[in-house]
Length: 402
Image (tube, rainbow, N blue to C red; front, side, top):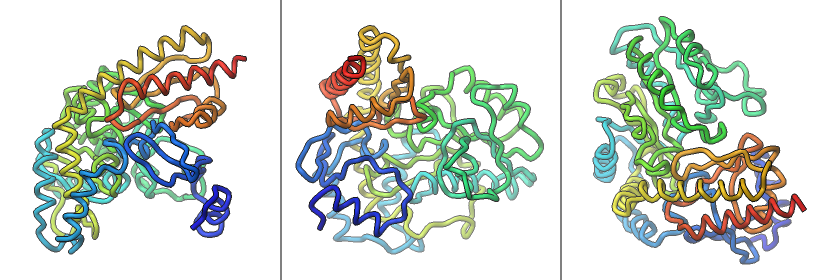
């Protein structure tokens, strides 16, 4: 065991592929909405494992479910019927208008499954040679080759991976004419996030969403919604697309689904589900008994404690706090945006020093697109935690001005 931060860094450099720009922090344990480093220092967590631990860290009730199920059945593969999958499926489908679900292991895998389902449905059910997926600029859909290609970003994320798969078109965000112009005889679906997380916490305007839905209907193509980050009460509804009163043909979930265990899902209409048949798509580990049992408990807690309503209220509380900071530090903060507790604070310039200042004050959050502080804390936080975050940000801005 390594007992110093520098020793851990050195050990990692010798053992792991260098794919991550790590935060200068080694976490030894976590509880609730707090992280603890090797020296026992406490950090307020406004990242939650990147919107994953929505119920907080190291919960005894989830650990009990995990242990109980692990003593009965962990893994037998998807060659067998397993009731924990069905219990979870019933609970998930009761929250939305979808009719069927496919379980997998991650958000990228869920989005990959959604792309495959859309193409196969068009080819084998509709009998049409439609395969292209249209996505939006600055979107993020994953890091497999297909989901990476679907991702509407450039730079290091795509460098060196050519040739990327064909069949993906990216259009400017919010430009209906560009979207309309991209649709052709080969278009299978339009794929969107209701709030672009990695893209800078950008909610899609309601009118734009309505135009997207209308274009899908007009051209008889599918609508895929990536709810990997926005789903499961994060935005103030169980699913973010419910803010817009729309019903996607396919939507995906992951991150918060099992509160830290690897779990993803593709949800779809009964009609679209006809695109899959035995042998067409599969996963060895997806929807295993332990992760399914934990995810079912996660959903129970979220619904019983009305965490969607809580996220909506706390998001509004955070918005008002940002307005006060804007008045106190003119020219430093442009504004805030997001839905519920997928919350972004837009800074006037590069936010690296501000992010570092927050970390130095034992507050953890994410900086995306260089200027957006992305807050995705556990949904179980309170107003006092948001106040503590804003106080730390106030202190950082004051020190930079000084």
